[in-house]
Length: 193
Image 1 (cartoon, one colour):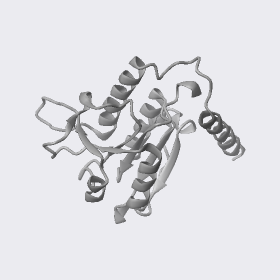
Image 2 (cartoon, helix red, strand yellow):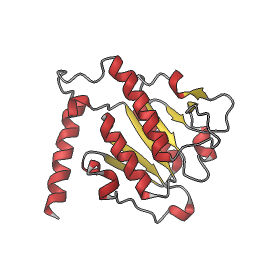
Image 3 (cartoon, one colour):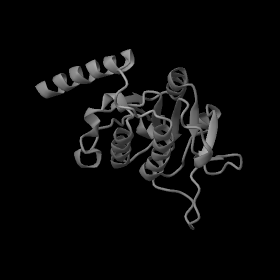
Image 4 (cartoon, helix red, strand yellow):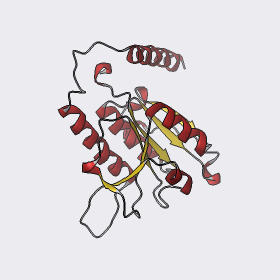
């Protein structure tokens, strides 16, 4: 499992209210080898929000996905840029948006998705290094947040698989070995409670 992990790709969810959507995103992240996600609650109405993944909707993926919770947007975006190099946003009302299937998802990136009602904040758009859309032909121009995330991640999986990023015989990098150590420690701590 760890050899197949993609440590240069992540998801950030901005002000997503429904914990079932977040849990479903975690499940998809695990399916394609993403080992951490970022949850940004910058909306004052969500400041007291914490996130507990649902057991059914996450199907246990929360054991294998590290969750980073932020309240300060700029702190979150700065961290994402420092670690992943670029933030790609999903904003529907952008005539310059790139089609998902034209994106180069072999390069490191944090994919940023907005909430169910308002989409992305102005701050997110200012920090964006590029915007993409999922092409659709239906009457409703958007997808559920967890579905949009799944479609995007499986396009990244497709590109990376073709490029050989999912080879099981590759030796574990120091980053992957350290991640494994943290997972084991986290699992031990949680088993005691």
